[in-house]
Length: 381
Image 1 (cartoon, rainbow, N blue to C red):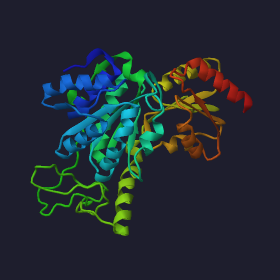
Image 2 (image 1 turned 90 degrees about the horizontal axis):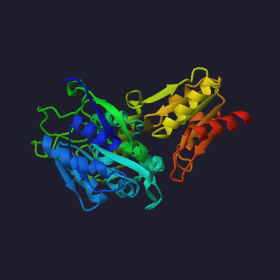
Image 3 (image 1 turned 180 degrees about the horizontal axis):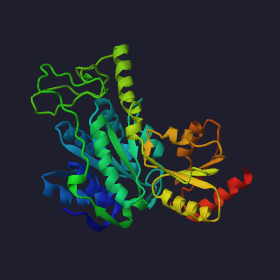
Image 4 (image 1 turned 45 degrees about the vertical axis):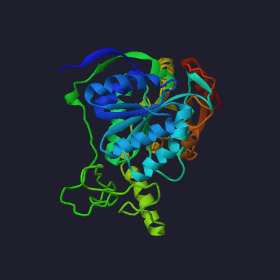
């Protein structure tokens, strides 16, 4: 089958990517600007033998996704800011119990009900630290409609591979814009499924690291290997424990399975950084404005480059640390009051002048605004 070209909305690309990745269960609650994901999932999932359910709220939606994943199904939910807040306790449950699942957050202006129909990137820190306690998480952010399709598949693959919730952090602009997308032949798509326990295991312990890679094999409920799941700290049998060494070993393993595999998880794009004296860091739809600004300034002979983050968390510290000493300024463009900039500043370790370009009024950061800010910073360097 050859590739298929379609005019596609970002939210539609998300559903297409999820089904291509093997999603067969969706639970959610309609909320602007993510509603099309629920609508299209309701339409398309029954055609591939999947199940859609509209739950009574976002808390129940996240719980249903976890339950479906425990039975062996690839499961997803989608929401926006207020709903994302409600999902946080169960995201923590999925993190501790190592249940693969994908959570799509189409960001809008906040806080509270905020600006329901206008874009923002204000959930960056909530995506990383929204649930309580130390926990593993992977967060991806697309800038183009085709990339929504690709990163949705990648979100499922990473979630399944590392037994971790994976968040696709979109924004309203990417979710609702339409672009030409060529869907690949399904046979060419790399699909990763969770590691299953060997049939020879007699007394299955659901949280034992049998293979030494930090990722226990996961049986499905109903397959004949019963196991216990709890949101309490647990030992390898899945039953609660308050033993300090058990607790330390569990949290260490949860975090190390991410940090030991950064080369596989991290994904970012470096553009014109080889000779750059100033570099703009961005993600999501903001990166589109940044790219336009960088190209215009390069035509004027300015030594400017950009880094576009596709993986937001874990953070690509090496993208900052690998910049040459000729770089003087780092600008972080984001539609919020200043969230990612603090992580960039910490990563820079004083090597560069780090400045935020922030907009939080429901309007896009424009290429002209990027150019003005870059010139201002370069003039004061």
